[in-house]
Image (cartoon, rainbow, N blue to C red; front, side, top):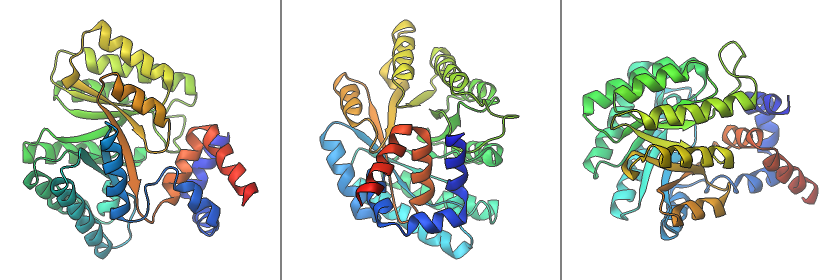
Length: 308
């Protein structure tokens, strides 16, 4: 119930206004967000790279209201890609389709994505992952992913599948046959029980099964194992050993600010370990979803409020 309430707050305008006014909320959010500017994000990326960690940079924002707003989003991503190339950073980028205008027009969104993908390809084929949003966008996201992946003949374009959706096993089987580049996460949006597993144990079981389904398939698909859950990490490692999966088929991913020592441990063990580093002023929805994911994050925020 607590998780569902926090996910509701992540999309509630009145809650966004209240929390965004709290100085302590902005300070606590910095645990999970690299900063509000591209310079902040690049500085964090350099530090993580020096520690042996890969990065994916995400300019925070979603559901923009006007076509004019998307122009700034595109230019920020293009500048980001240029800086990744110029500074020789070990970083990909992640983006949301509603940040590129999907709620306004699919044509607008696809045109904006083409601009970003063109820049990525011109600067050394920097990988681009299309994030998955709520289930309202699943079909459209997969359609756009497939269209642009085939149009650009660009294996470094990836997308995301969420283990809490009942449909995800079928999606993963189809994408595996396409040699797709997929990030598998548990899912962080408020979804009805008619389409998503309501119990964490069922989500966990499905996650572990989907990792095995994807990695054990005789394809050249690529899996980003995005989890902080120790049991899911161990299950993935067991699958990797059991099926003798080569390192070119997978990597681990975690969020910035969560389980930093474990991130370093995995990198030092020889795994590719990528840190999802968000930045930007639109930090509120992302922050609330992080609080909903783990009770420890919520208690950390509560203690900070009382200390303020």
